[in-house]
Length: 272
Ligand code: G1P
Image 1 (cartoon, rainbow, N blue to C red):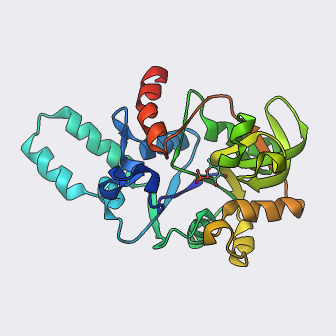
Image 2 (tube, rainbow, N blue to C red):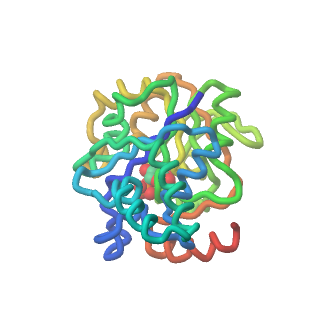
Image 3 (cartoon, helix red, strand yellow):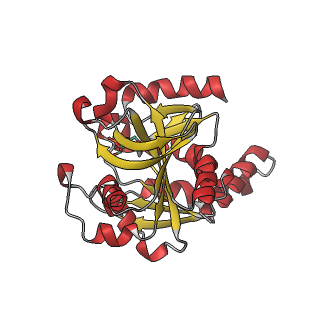
């Protein structure tokens, strides 16, 4: 059973400055709701029971968003008839029960973020989601968990992208492919077109085996001096660990750039 989800939230959000200098990018509203809530709702619907948020110790706003009972209680007391307020607080309390915080004070990469969650990880596999990647129309995490149940292997969400854009993504190589999934035999982070094993890109959702922690522990820093999860996955794939690409057919939105973020509200309002 995949019951835990790690969400790395320690990135600098450089591409969304100056907005992200005051509000963490994951809390910027998209059609009235932060990206982080869309992702959490997707996970809850897929059966996730616990979130591990990896944040810098100094980034208090994410904590405050979910853990601010005193503030809510005070206004609810004042505005007893405001039903919306009560509903908002109820929803926040529901999220609150599921969240644990882990600290990553430097943006040292997704691999380092996962490593920092070690003491909380319980089952054989866990989900990791990148908060820049918003997914609509179909529950990508649910589809991935179903594929994990069927294959018992690890799963990466993937989407066919235009060939000329391969250098923007982590790209997956495979041997056999069926309509909905494939067995991965290669993972390359942001390859040149000539070096890309396919045009199936990683789209920010991973079901990973707990054993990846021992790979990460000994892993050297990669591109940009960071510990990348992709490098650890590559190592496991080379050592015959089964990783499947789940071909996602819903709507994918990249909210990590200003252009994507602006478009996202319009797209969400169309699809919801
Ligand atoms: C990250 C991953 C990359 C993936 C992309 C979209 O890149 O490293 O493999 O394809 O997210 O999920 P980033 O967007 O941080 O540059």
